[in-house]
Length: 640
Image (cartoon, rainbow, N blue to C red; front, side):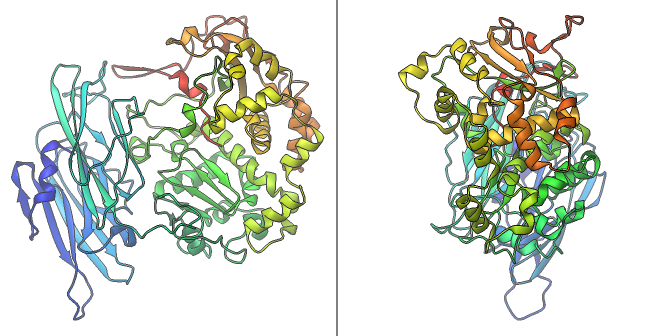
């Protein structure tokens, strides 16, 4: 939204009141109910004269009422089609790409059932907007908030240009003061927690930056902080989380999935009669059966998940494995993805699901908290998924406006699903779904735990790992423990010996017994189903350039290493008993060593006849912009 439009918060309420040269306005409407109560007023705020290329925001607020407790639905009523990705939010943000007039309507329903509707129209100006903050939105008090700048564009064509914004300055203009996260080193992004408020409150932020053409531009963004109920001390989720809605509001599980899977307002898990495991209802669940258990912060997340199941789950693996979960949660504030036995649900980061730039705009960009662990150590263990001597998946810079297909999701989303569903199947493998005992999923877990019947326990009993050094280092790298002097002294060559002679599939497998199982399974399934293999390596830490990261040891397809394969096969047989494990592992390529002494980038090519592979997929080009794949992506764990 343009800088000038910040005046919207100061506009008087009227039938339609312009506010200064920005064209900002508020539009009011009354309840449709006919009774003797004094009606509340629905107020729509927004910039009614946006520039072409501008990120526009419209806000719907009812005086004296928290928007968080209301049901909201926006629609476009006229004008060239714009992509709306937050139609259930109090803040509707979108881009105006073509000049002209546009109309929108909003329907707001209170918890009491009172209904409000209003329409609003806007007309573009002739100017082009060159600086855009992504994205105006609503957030619950206390929840994570992030804002980011898009890459600079050409004022005439709107295409991305070479170079970057410089002299970037962020400032808060109005609302209760927030503190920007000091650990964030990306100046195109600000990260903070929404402040506590006693009523819905608008925060305004501005950014100024110098374009590669030498001109300085500015923009404003608005965050509507929603007043919410106090979180009780015994809440299952005791830190603020986003409000989620059932994808299928007519599902018999809609109420349970909304109230006791991802909410700050429940302290006791749902009973089995309210929310059981999918496989207890359906031996062979359909996509529709699974979608009855999906809740999301934004409808497009569920729709993309559904398309993925319909188009990319060609072998039925994910539908099969989803039998062991109670629900699927996809919300803009989830990072990293995880499985939680307390609810029996998997929680998925929507970064794995977006298809359009507008969809990506609503996703929180706060980094994974684990990325700071282990900084004192003298080694790192990068990893990547590879196919045909290239990165299996593309890199998608956050500042570029990139579109993806459902097929593009596979290299990152498929291993995520195999990994998280391995956690669920670890506790409730398909062979046990007819004998789940307990009044809730959590109680059923206690039964399994008491019996030491989880797959992780069986694997540890029958095929234990042996490296005490790697197990201790995992507490540093993944759980934040302080390293000892001995651990700090380890060189990459030491780690290579510890790891390569043991039986884990990945460094992350030492994080816990459960991660041991999940890393074995996701690598097995990616190799078998997609021909995508995982590289594991030990290198020195980065010293500033990609070429400085040198392999002390590396291996491709470690799950078929002679030390590791028996453990991988053991897990596979318990998770996928319908398939013949001997046939499956016969189709998985043998493990291959990477070139010791080569850089991490150069080691990707194991084809001696094709030594001129040009480090594919390390750079992304869009019009005049070039972005290099950050090495950090190869050392982060994007799920747990």
